[in-house]
Length: 357
Ligand code: ATP
Image 1 (cartoon, helix red, strand yellow):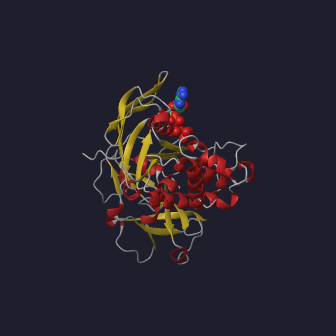
Image 2 (image 1 turned 90 degrees about the horizontal axis):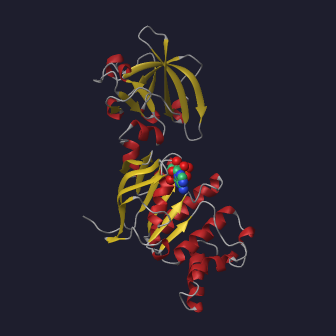
Image 3 (image 1 turned 90 degrees about the vertical axis):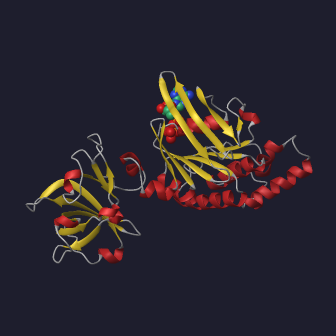
């Protein structure tokens, strides 16, 4: 067993009668970027706060490099924390904010050097004498980041650090944060509810729902092989199809079949390859949406009598492909749903079958 990194074992936490975390166990590998991902209220922040020592667990352990730190106070943990709100001291300059945690721990000269190093690292050396109010949101968050890493923390904990920023700055800071994390090799845990953020930034994604971990894996794993309909639905877009729709596939009536929009192929009705027995099915065009890099087409599947069902399917295709078809409403197109791309979830409760777009 690899003792390096953070080992979280059997964590439970209740607030009054409400069970916020139920038997949570996960290994956070040393030097890697882990994202805790899940919908609002699933317990991500509570887990991060327990890791930080800001919240006490009801049971279970938190081990760092083989040491049990479950009862260790937050101040003794040497963890850097960055929150969504920048939490900078408004009356201190940028450099004073970054050096704040080092005060009294190192000689003044050394602190100055460290602050300068950190400011250069996050590209803010030019604004070192400004006050937080004189900075943009993205700059303020970089100050918060510099302040957190100035202490050479064992672990960097980030609680939705990008969500208060506008879209462009968010994407830019995403890249900078990843680059910094990789360069410093610092073990990082970030809470986010944004699946795109998790997919683009993480080495490991921990998907949570209702106080439990539902899947742990690389971004590719959770996207390509989501182990429940919940994960398939939460990460990326997905079509859920009643088992009976795919007559050529072996499935029981309560099974759920799912396929990502980019895995469905579209053909003109005439000359379509194979028919209904071979991954083929037809649909009536309902709506075409331009999404910049691709088009998202929404269709209603046709039944065997040639009229539409109420089963909606979305298909993503490149502009080049999109130009080949007639997109007028209700025109009939042929879809090919490759069996190897189908996700098959045996016996799901009714209600799990819906599509996202
Ligand atoms: P969000 O993305 O909305 O912050 P989250 O996944 O981070 O959600 P948590 O903040 O961990 O969720 O909260 C999990 C659940 O525990 C929520 O239902 C929340 O209301 C509840 N909770 C969290 N902290 C407390 C508290 N101090 N007292 C009572 N209930 C709490």
